[in-house]
Image (cartoon, rainbow, N blue to C red; front, side, top):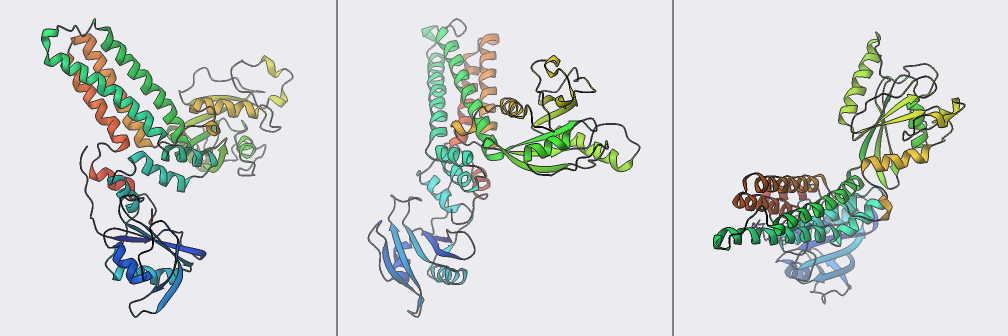
Length: 441
């Protein structure tokens, strides 16, 4: 593991949200905690016991009164001595207290610095530290539950189990290279090929769960596209439950990209209604079509609406595109439509639940409420890179019978996986991750 360093001074920050409240908390961590506690609260409280105190300034005048808590290191959140001062939640009095603490030798904490110290002092791994920020930022109950599971180490446990499998195989391969008298044939050795397959299957399983976990935190963008008057705006309003888009019988009503957010069984979706795709001499509508096409390129999923009463579905679609047959309320026999294609009436709501199921299946998550953990894009990138290394290792083993090259690819796989939990992390990566945290965490 690389050894990222940090300034081992004392930091302080308000731990409660800005604004007024019944209670305001200031958190302090570092080597000067006991001295600051004696100066501000007049004592060092008994560890982990809530103690009443009056908080005083440099002239011994009372600034506030409340509760003080002391958590001696290493048995604290950061692994250092930690002091929590719980006073009244007015912004002025909290700023006076924080200024007093800073005057005693602490400095204002940077965003995420408490969590970063917890990570650097081995109180949390990197995925658990990120889960703290994800829990705070959760926009749905499913995301909050997933963040809790990540904070409790479920994601880390899966990655560490996979790491152990990779390391075990790497050790075996390198031992065989170092002791050629054993005459191990890498191609015919069923143990090597069998273990590679098992590792790839384990990685594939984690990738599937991580895709769902990424959706819980980052959500997905879904673009509605199709010809004018296919019912895109009606579906937009039906899904969001609001009159977000203007609906008329006049083709080309939508001229721009209109967005709204909805929750699909705990998954935050950014739904985009776009201009109908057609050639137009109208400069404004043409610009709307151009923007619609650009939105499709960037979307996680495209819903291609077709007016089933007048048009036929396209013969080919993209990998992220789902064709939806709309206006089945106008048909005498909707069952005659192609099977396997979602059939709905945006006007009446018929078929909408089946469409939602298809949406979740296409996005790669079946039940966000049922379990799982949160994940981030960087986790997906590391897992994909680890998978590429495994594929390259299998290829050189099969094509070149090169045990040395296989060992190198296994080392690369191990490095990418270690980046997820922070076992191997560069300082600039840590800075980028923790800078996105809120101050006081």
